[in-house]
Length: 162
Image (cartoon, rainbow, N blue to C red; front, side, top):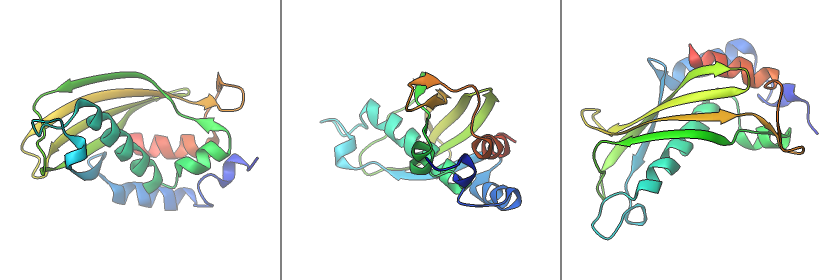
């Protein structure tokens, strides 16, 4: 199994910090989406599960932007399953609409990482969904909660939370 230090693909702390700075806007990472027909119900409204998929895509892209590739995380035996989720649908996205999924780390408590989300119109004048998701680091081989995050992951997440 690779060492946790190889997780960030040998990026230094300053390189990770620079990537994180470039990836976020006021601590929000922004991930653009478009609502395609396969995301919608028969009325052309975005299906409720699509929002969860978009949030996960944004979270994975956010982590990758600071040097944490999820495939590498899994390769070292660390998984981050969702353990808690709260969503509020304010307004439906419609087929063909463009939007932005914004995500940021709300807090890091041991091996529990809490993320905030907002899905907004491309011009950010309409809020479609707000959510909070909690993840917990799990040893993939043992299926048990880890005692601590790998050091490089923790350092990167702390930078995202600033």
